[in-house]
Amino acid sequence: MARPLSTAALDAARRVLDDVDQCTDPVATARLLPPEVYTGEDFWEFEKEAIFGREWLCVGHVSEIPEPGDQLPLTILDEPIVILRDLSGDVRVMSAVCQHRGQPLFGGLAGEGRDAASPCLNSRRMVCPYHNWQFALDGRLVAAPSMTETVPVKQLRETIRLPQIRHEIFHGLILINFDDDAQPLGSSLARIDEELSTFGLDDLVALPAQVFPNQQWNWKIHHDNALEPYHTSYVHRGVHEAAPAKNARFYDFHEGDGQVMHPTYLLDENAGLASTDGKRTTAIIPGLTDEQRRRVMFASIPPMLFSILQPTFVQLAMIHPTGPGSMDLRRVNLYPKSAVEEPGFHEAYERFTERKALAIHQDAVTTAALQQGLRSRYAPRGPLSWMESNIPQLNQWLIERYRKALTHDV
Image (cartoon, rainbow, N blue to C red):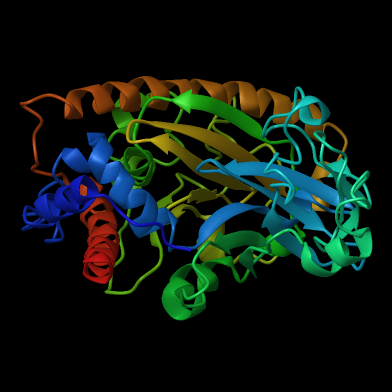
């Protein structure tokens, strides 16, 4: 359900779209987007509806709710939702706001101490901590204490249900859309669909999520930085040598594409990013092509997912913006079940995460500083290196949607 935009938000969108010449050019002549798209409060108001209110948002992976009754509460741009597996084993996504007074079902005392890194809950019901209204796993109201004197509970059960949120499952990824009129995922993800066809992503096992709250940079900066290999030789010196920036390759980007992605080739098949010695530490995912065994694929499904497809595992970084210059980040790493069950896996994984923490810290320092620089009156608009070829591609993805939303809302 679209929300009306203020005059200030629409004016900010017009101002930006009047200043995007060359932002989608080939990289040799491309310009960066106006700094306002990363820093402006009014533009952020526009973007929340233009992008996050209308696009497909990746919120999790099916292995995070493996059993019937599993419930994973999340908050997406202030919207409490729950991803769950019902008693038939089907995945559902619905509002986690009690339909009595608006209390979040997983907030208050019953949800005390929970955050996005907490493992899923398991129950046959969802119980509001405020007045103990209870909902079944399909969203139906099943109990409402002390209501009979006002409205018969039978009547309430016929009329009250948790709102269902539209979702699709794509290679085990759970994507939601708050716009009931949005087009299905369809062919917009054809390139990454082909890439994932050999990974068996549906059957990979999620390790416990890592959550990094209150990161101080814009969500688009996160995609730009994660996609471009230019910085890796300098910011990640000593961590990224297994896939050097000079081994990066780039694809063409076409109107309507729903992903931005590129491969970087490993020095050799035994190499592994962020491992303690530059070597892979777990077995290669069965079914990968020879090409996939030799490269790392960096792939965004904007606006909320950035993924790294390595020969041995898949990393999902789900981006939860909280403002024009802030976001929470939820990372989930996926491995084959056979690898997780190997003796010594968890020790090797702990060493990997310690090493990876260094790269995460390096990116955090750099991107927070970049956010600060973009607030400067002297913030630049380019030029770009050939190793930043994905930036004008992400610009194109954004501008297509900004223009469509502005046309729709005017």
